Length: 237
Image 1 (tube, rainbow, N blue to C red):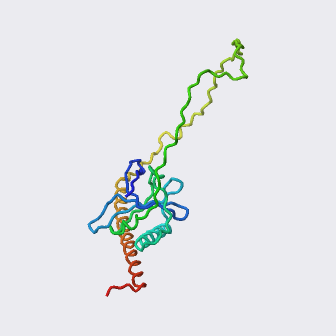
Image 2: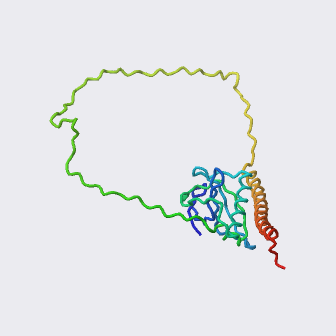
Image 3: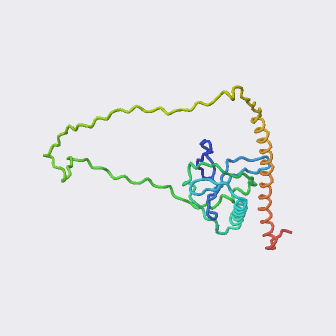
C-alpha cells in the first residue's frame, strides 16, 4: 500500500497508508489508515476533505456522499467494472496538515477492494540545471564612462535645534469621595474539573457514534452485495 507523511495540528509527522485520494464534487477526499484493527477484524480508517491544500470538516451531506463513494468503489472492483471515481496524485499532498478528519471502521476484507486499481502516477523528475560558464571579463555598461570619476561633495546640512517634548497634563482624580472603595471578591470556579468532565462525556459520545457509523457502513456494503445477487438470480441452492 502506498505511503505518505502527514502532520497533525501539533505538527507531529506520521506515515500513513493511502487507501484512496479522489475527487468528490468541489473537494478532494483522502482515505488513509494506520492499520489499527479490533478483535473482530475491523480496521480503523480516516477520511478528510482537502480544499486548496487545506483540510476542512465534512458536512453531513458530504459524509453521506463519501460513504456512497466507498460502496461504489468496492462494488465496481468486485465486479471487475471500470472505476467511475477519478483518482488524484496523493504524492502532491505529502506533508499536509490534517486538522479535520472523521474516523470510522470497515471490515478487513473490504479494504483490499477499496484501495485496488488506483491510478498510477510517475515520480516527478528533477529539473535539469544548465552549467554556468565562467565570466572572463567584467562587463561595463555602455552608458557608464570608465574615464569619469565622481568626486564626493561636502554638503552642509541645516542645523536643527532639538525640541523639548511637552509633558501632557494628567488630571489627578479626586480620591476624597472614594477613600474606602468596596472590592468584590471573585468567585472561584474550577474550570479544569469542568473541562475534564465535559471532555470525558464528549469522548464517550464520540466513541458510541463512531461504532454506530462503522457498523452502518459495513452492513450497507454487505446489503448492497446481497441485493445484487438476489436481483441477478444467482442464489446458491
